[in-house]
Length: 206
Length: 263
Image (cartoon, rainbow over all chains, first blue to last red; front, side):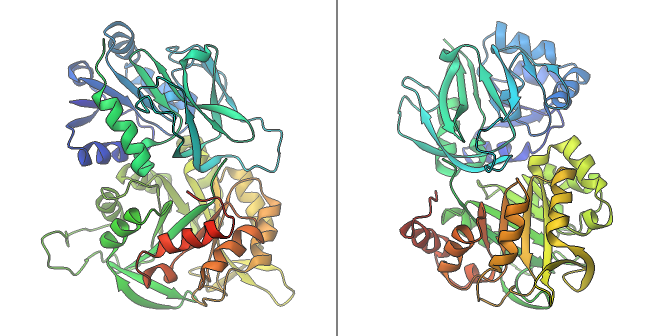
């Protein structure tokens, strides 16, 4: 059973649709028992950083996430905003503390080429690093769907598992033990995205 | 680098997928659910799904067991078709409030397209951006060419001239928090004669958010023109896609052969 965390941030059904397509059981939930009872946790999300943290706090889900992910090492996948709030700090909607699962912060794109539109919307190439689990240890370039104006800046380079290029390299995905996260939307990226989901679903914590 | 996007634009009227000609004539071309499945299989990059129905009839008029003819509102249709779509879906048509936006997003849409409500009150974009993030707010603009060569924003399905200049309006929408502009030429819609390039170019140069060109594609070369001459981030095709088997595959092949970086 996979728990998709419902914290009122955007389109959760898409992730559910893909899990259903892959024949995986899931529940979209904000209940602690269901999160604790699940084998894996997915934190999707679109919207603003501050709003996301506020909602998680109001739903009283901060402690259970820390417990399940950091202590019990349950496999966790953050998507888009669900990746960004893993950082220590964000600036969308005012300066705000994140979950702090990863060292780093989330900043607005500051591109030299002012002609590049922001948000960064569309399909972009990702270069996976060697040894990545989400990409099945295959460094072949993939194409994923992105939609965001802010991006994660990691303090620990080894947390990054893939980069994309939009007026310069930025973090497309991270992997740190049982914690996985993507800036792109694998649930909206057709075959390459389905592969990422399959790799996450096949992963078992050591 | 970021690829140029090819978008299929689907119009739903009285439960049927239709082709639009100049915003005034509509021909039934098929079934929305099959179309979404096909476009996914054919590697389209995105789907814009607009409800132009004002009768609140969502009967697919199919007796096959696969179709649910009891759907009562567009959000239910989105929920239904999004199960077969693993590319982003933008839903629009009849959005009046933040609640409508929430309803469409929670039904499975990734973005919403807002037209009239933004013209009446831009607050819906400002507030929507705060609550849902600007990345999911597409402001749809219907543009008509004036005798002096400028373009005016039209409302009420392209029938009524608001008197507003398109370029000024696009800038205002960006400032309010729009994430993208979906720009349709009322004049070229259904003409198969190509995009209104001067229109597209004027908006692309004025804003720093992605612009999607719409209205007029009758030839794959029009897609190349939209990107190379118009400078858009994405090109949208409606009618032309409905009448060609494997349409998006052919379109992409053509774009690639002409130097456009697509997926």
